Length: 279
Image (cartoon, rainbow, N blue to C red; front, side, top):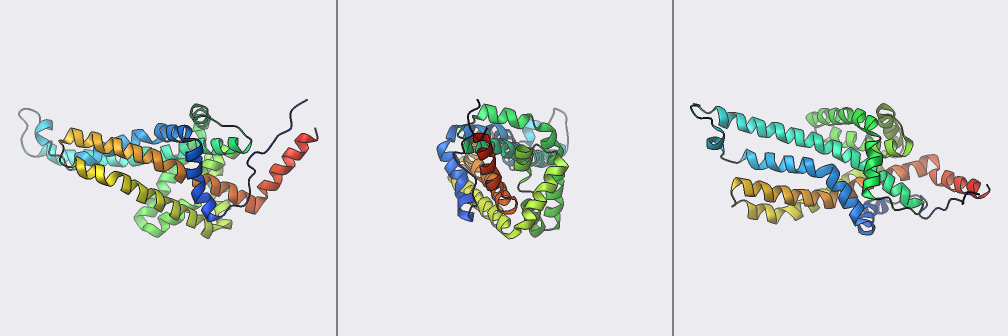
């Protein structure tokens, strides 16, 4: 006879504070998992971004100029290459954040049933959903670019309406278009609360990242180009590992809260357990 299911951390309606604190509580209780997932998803983009940022201000024209070359071809081309590297890093980071959201959704869901999912298992689960992730990624990135070009306000609205795409992919196993539509429908029912979660969690992560990187970046300014890039990349990677997990977890908790308040997810969960115990 199968053992009855037991809810260790049942889903319940959450306050704004609960959602903002939840990510930091998860980091405190499972630091290895959260930090490892953040590193796997975000460090490559962070290193590339650090390289591009350091390269923009570096005087490396003499290193890149080929023998016999004339004019300022290299110095003109290098900032363009650095700009392209920055754009590429931003694109890779957005993809990493999407994968991180899928992985952390599995971690949070497993905790509800008393299981601690490790980083390797969570990342493996996220990679198995690559079809949905890679399908949603260009649509989300394209919408963000269009919103950014328009102005900041549409960008905030777009990011809010698409904040729970990754949790929807992970928890419901749906495709990219369905996940985006699902996110928009859930958020539309409680838009202002969702907007508050997105803006406040992003603000906390941004301020903390700035605090963590300010002094090391200032000290690195006097170093040669290569050393400056190395210091900035390492510091940025560490800051991203510390702040990205709680930021993304806030979106996971937002998804669960939206489902509790609009679909009775907590009641469904309790009913599942009751039927399981009844055999």
